[in-house]
Length: 461
Ligand code: OOG
Ligand code: NI
Image (cartoon, rainbow, N blue to C red; front, side):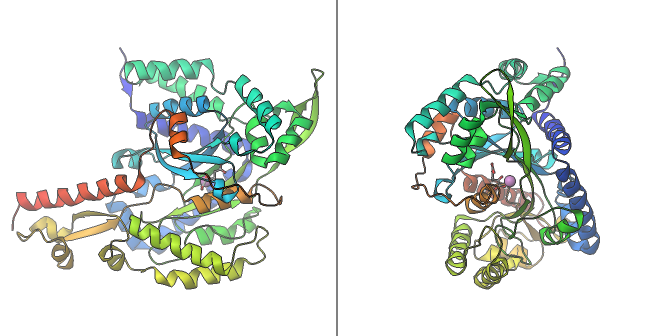
């Protein structure tokens, strides 16, 4: 029997194969990658302290390799099979996102690695949305869409067989792992030949752009890939120089000294030629706009208290200025955001002391030499024996996600749906429960505290 390839190694090869494929499919993504790499290098040179902390926490190597992607699937069966496929790569569903409130007829989760080791190895995540035809009012269109979706198979026979094999045998050998990556990649590939005719496409599109995007194609093409940058504003400012048209405002919190959660911006989706079925065995020319590129900057994960404060401040900002899709009030929005977010402490000590963020604790150089026999963390921190680093937020933000969806739905008027979160239904379709992100971060923090206290017990000064 051949040795097993680790799930993290499979995920790393998958992430890099996906990036290569998307670079070929959407050349602007390749340009964006180059720009992000340049800005990350410059930022590290300009900020030696940041570089040092990233090195000390083993997070430096992962930065340039890091990215997330997104797909939208059409049926419960597709979602459940996707879950099993991602599990082979060590990616598990975290969080439930209801986007109906934001006018997008989907609900979603993020498949991602969980433990620190796996995240450091390769943190590839995929934001995965399930279409909610139940939110579409037109009943006959709903039935037609169901029928089209029921007929498609988004996985190759090889991908299904290898997923089953991995489940049965607890992993894959080297050759199987390489074949698995190639077979699963097919599910994410762009198809320029539609599953439907042009008139059906238009009817789906009129119901909602996203319905057309999911139902009209053979598979859930990857719709964007997002490298992580250390300075999103700089990348945003430089994008036009590289011939990339950006979204008007950066989603998420404003510029801060201590980054929190997640800031994101994207470039507009491309209008691409598609051949639609003409009903006589031939093809008819049309276009579809779906695929784009995005960048993200990640900050500290917030506790429920910190998150509630973030949500409130974002809400307060949007009561003052709601960012328009055409970017006409971008400056006013950014000014309001900066002003309102003065209500969120912007130094690590306050964020920690007020219980707003999650941190990972470790012995400082001084602590490694010897430590007093007390277990009062605050005192050990104040006296410099223990240091704390922000735990990076690995998840997503529903309001931001909605902004990303919207900016790529074209200029069509925003639609309203009745808010209808349905996590239970989503989990039944997924075939598993999603992990609660807060519990997960709290667990990582707690383990780091315990490791410090154990070290302290072992070596009193
Ligand atoms: C997903 C949008 C959400 C993000 O970064 O918030 C997302 C989609 O457009 O399918 O990827
Ligand atoms: Ni994204």
